[in-house]
Image 1 (cartoon, protein in one colour):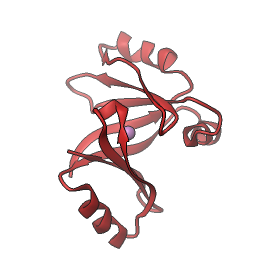
Image 2: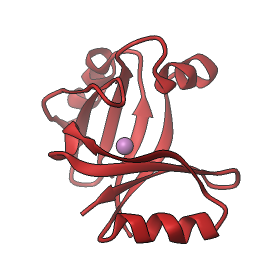
Image 3: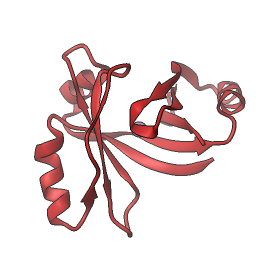
Image 4: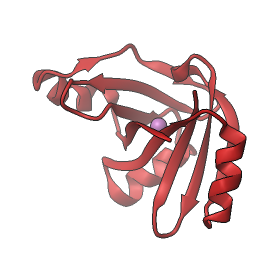
Length: 129
Ligand code: NI
């Protein structure tokens, strides 16, 4: 699995991105993902892991709960994998539970993503290569 990005829950992509852009990060366009009910934009800088800002599109988005509990916070790491299904089965053997079954993601050209949770590791996103 190759590391891909850190996911950060934010109230407002615009408000959060200002600080990073001021620090030399390049920002992508903002994507609307109707399946996850979120807006997403990425921040890139050569010495930094890729940052994914995730803003809830409505109040029942799971990201809304993260914001309520923890405020703006990093809440998942994402890894790329050649074989999504195989990696999921592997991780299930390592006590991860699938929270979101593979679904296409607009922010990744409709490559599939999946979210898994392990109590000692937290939330991991997998992205199909
Ligand atoms: Ni992500």
